[in-house]
Image (cartoon, rainbow, N blue to C red; front, side, top):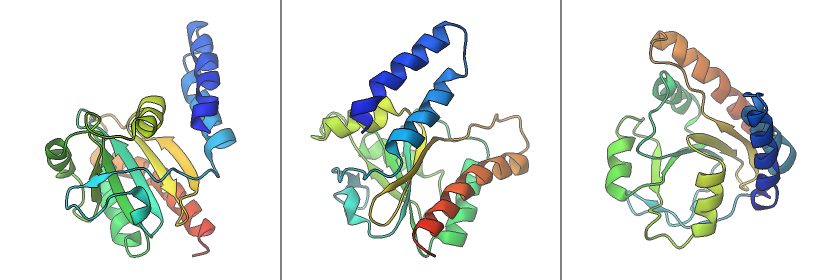
Amino acid sequence: MLELYHDEFQTKSESDFNLGNHNSTNNYFDSLVSLKLKGTILDNFRVYSINNKINHLYDFKNPLYLMSYASWCVPSNGETEALKQLIDTHGDWMDFVLIMWDTKEDAILFSKQFHTKIKVLYVDELYNTETKTIKMLKHKLGLPISITLSQDKTILNIRSNKQVHPSVDTEIATKICLKSMKKDILDLKKYENL
């Protein structure tokens, strides 16, 4: 679905942006997600885990909160603390997964700033054969994003991660990040009848 509809949304977004509507990118992204991507099934693409236990996305049997990052991204102010709180509350029935579009070494270094219960995957673009998936997930959706996936790998939401400026108080920043993440988790609980 992303391959079918992304270019149309991208063209409209760029056209509006060039005409002075600088909020159009977010609006079109949200429309693409809500109208075309929610309810579809995520492909079972090949991944590598830093502990070598996971080989494909479908190896995860629980519902997923999948965060897509690269080592050059900086997590938002409050994001890692918000994730810690969510893992402590919901980590017994769902998996929190960080997928890095990097080498194994870069993935290990970057993931050290996150909770130790987050499962870390990486996809090295130089060696991975899943070029279509890489192009779709990384290059068309951008980074950093979060994807909420049910147990059967139905996409419940895709959103650009909330970016809170470093000057904002950490406690306030954590609340801002928690607000958007909690909505995804509540939707996931509802979908899974929990």
